[in-house]
Length: 318
Image (cartoon, rainbow, N blue to C red):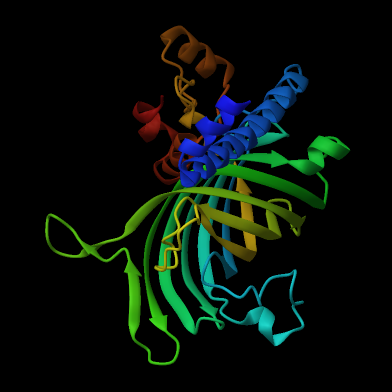
C-alpha cells in the first residue's frame, strides 16, 4: 500500500484526472455497444431492413446552453424554469440536419450536421464569451419505444436515444464585461498556408434523448434535449487549469420525413424491368398471346398507333 501511495504521489494530478475521464468515456461506449449487441441477438430472427429501406431526414432548430468555466448556470433547468427570464439569458440559436438509417426496428445510425452560435456570461468575474461552431458527428440510434413496448409501425408517439462521436470546429472570443476588452480567443490561429483563419478542431461526443409524434404516414415532429461534449477546455476561449471538457446543451424542435431509396440502388441488385424481354422466343410468345406490359414504351406506342394506324405502325412494334 505504501508503494502505491508513493507512486500515486509522483503522478501529476492532471494526468490522473485525464486517465479517469478516459476510463469513464470508454465505459460509456462499452455499455452502449453491449446494449446494441444484446438487441441484435434478440432481433436476429426478426425483421431487418435492406439498404434502401427505413431512411429519414430531419431538420431542426434549437436554443443553446453552454456548460463550462465561463457560466453562472442561470439558464439551466436546475437553477431556473422556462418561465424565468434568466432561463433564456445567453441562449443562442443553432440549426442542423439529421440523416437516419435504421437497420432493424430497434437500432440504426444517425449522421448530424450542426451550426450554432454560442454565448455565456460569468457575472462574478465580469467576463463573457461569444462564438460559433460547426459540429459533424455519427451516432448509434436506439428506438426506445420499439425496445420497451414492442414493434409497432403505427405507433403515434415514440422515443429514442443516441450516442456517438465526431468533431467540432470552433471560433470564439472572450471579453471583459465592463471594458469590452478582448481577453482571449480560440480558433483564430493563422493557417500555415496563409489566407483565412483556422478554426479550432476537437473531438466531440454527442448524446441526446428525444420524443417524436407522427402527424402523417411519413411525417413526424420531434422535440429533444441534446449535449455536445467537446474534449477541450478552450471552447469558451478562457481555459482554466483543471478543466478537461466543456459542452454545449441544446433544446431542439424539428420535423422529419421518412422515405425509402429506389429499389434499383441496391448494390448488385436486379435492374428495373422495362417490360421487354431479351429472349426472342418470349417476345414472339407475348405477341402471339397479346401479353403486353403497361410500360411507358407501351403508352408511347399506343399514341402512335392511334395517330398513324396499325398498318403504318407495324414496323415500330417490339
